[in-house]
Length: 305
Image 1 (cartoon, rainbow, N blue to C red):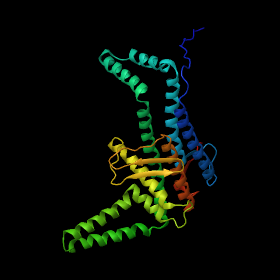
Image 2 (cartoon, helix red, strand yellow; image 1 turned 180 degrees about the vertical axis):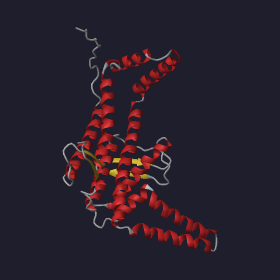
Image 3 (cartoon, helix red, strand yellow; image 1 turned 180 degrees about the horizontal axis):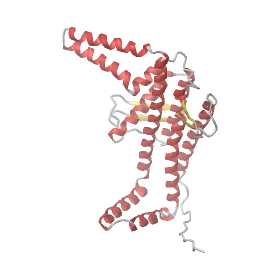
Image 4 (spheres, rainbow, N blue to C red; image 1 turned 90 degrees about the vertical axis):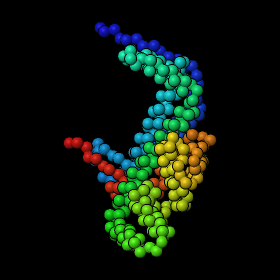
């Protein structure tokens, strides 16, 4: 019989970090919220057994899974002496690395150990920035699908914008001076942004809601704008390039994003709670427009025969 390879065992030396446990808890509560909404949404569709499903809620749940996987494994390593088998992982990698690159690998490992020991809060913050980027991208994708469905319901909507654009283009040559021409160009640019930008998509969708199922539509739209600005800050190393200050405020969370600065919150889990609010806003949009059951809210992919 082949002798089984023996591996070293590691004992837990340090208690779990209560803050990290709370972050994982909040993320799992968000995932549970998504699963709850997903189950309700599925009741509006014919879903054959074994079919694949994609929806807004599945997308947010996937983003949660990635962050929880990261945090749980980091917490396991952190509570073990010497971060458990982390060194063994790098030793095995080093054993398969050519001599030309071994010094680079060693330098990277030393810096990685220093980062995990000294800059954990910075590391957690970077993970959450990626989470905000991913979750807003999910929101943007499914809001775009709703916008497209609404435009199909009312095909005159895009032609109305085209007529307005044509009017502005015709006005431009007859403008009397530069300020008038600049004003026309600004209106053209605004009209084009309204058709193409994320903000324009959100504005269009909300403009089609006659009765909103949540108490304050403007407050929700403000949160969406702040969330989008935070997502966009990833292009500037986390620093906001927005012309305006933003605040993401709701039940149990407060995130500030001043123009020219990075976001700030007293609790990293505020970002998770803000995402939960975004999930509730999306749900209210679907309910208010009576879109549950429409293909724009869920893809059902039949199983292979």
